[in-house]
Amino acid sequence: MKVRVKEFKDKASLKEYLLSLGNTTQGAEILSSKGKVFLFELDGVDTRAANILKQDAISVGGDCAVPRKASSFEKGYWKVLLVVNGRELDKLTEKLEKQPFGLRKLSLKLRETLKNYLKDSFILSYRGKELPLSEPVVMGILNATPDSFSDGGKYTSLDSAVKRAEEIISQGGKIVDVGGESTRPGAPPVPLEEELRRVIPVIREIRKKLGDNFFISIDTYKAEVARQALLEGADMVNDVSALRFDPKMAEVVSSFGCPVVIMHMKGTPRDMQKNPHYEDVVSEICDFFEERISFALERGVSRDKIILDPGIGFGKRLIEDNLCILKRFSEFRVFGLPLLIGASRKSFIGAITGVENPEDRLAGSLGAIAPAFYRGAKIFRVHDVKETYDFLKLLYEVERAKC
Image (tube, rainbow, N blue to C red; front, top):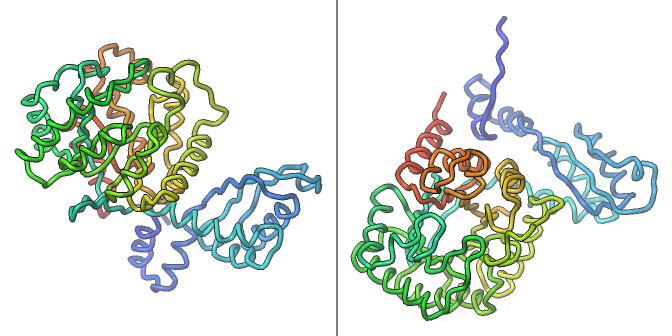
């Protein structure tokens, strides 16, 4: 008799394996729902609700970690950890629908959260074009700036910028991210007219010479820059301020109906690295995303146009926060939206590896995006397009191999 340990990427692959063993379709469906345990952190749970939740969770085969004070019926609101598999969650939410103290509402929230968390396929669409995110998508950086931290000054001429865009596309990039203002730590703001002068001719010329079979992203927090870029052929807005710095940005995104990247940053590029502090960086970023998503939806931005970026290096402690974001990257999946990671050549890589020159940080950059890939990132914003494309292609093919 042999004993082996098996691992499966998701419910679908487990179900396929169970069918190969000769299980019935119904049996495979039931068993595959038991194949993965989910841990739900619930905050603000009333004492009475916490005790009912634990009892109901145990009754369906799961469990719930409740603070001693709550289980002793001390009044208050608590943080608890619910432990269930998919099958148990189905049974539990049915029970919670009949319970008081906010548990009926919680049952709906649990179902919605798990549905969002398990969502793995997205499509970016704009002006009749579609960009599937079923495979990892590389976003190549085109900095039309004299002072970006890694490649400032390389692509300030129109000809060099167009050649860079052509290189990005030929090396596997699906999105060209054009920026005219450096957002490196301590960077001063660029006047509107100067930013327009840097990026609008570039976008116009790229679209004219290279066609329409790829996406152009405008990396800006200024509504007027975004508006003119979209008119000249850009397809999406990459806003490091998450629609905060310019009150008209949400209106522009909404009126054009284009995809938008909402990125987390504490402070501004000029002051973001002045002693940033978090009690729990991932939870605080999630709170930020929740507020920003609501803000965008209230102003007419479609939910299916929103992309989330936790902002590696933007108002984060150099090593601990950035590593924590990568390690817990999957927690950002609770919103059911595409996730973008931008770690390429950043300072934390140099701090860890000892590589001082940003252009020499390729190995570290690839090491940084690997955990994000396995934890749900769909778009990878990078300087080294070919190397990143090949690296991600191999990771992706290993994951989808039938064996």
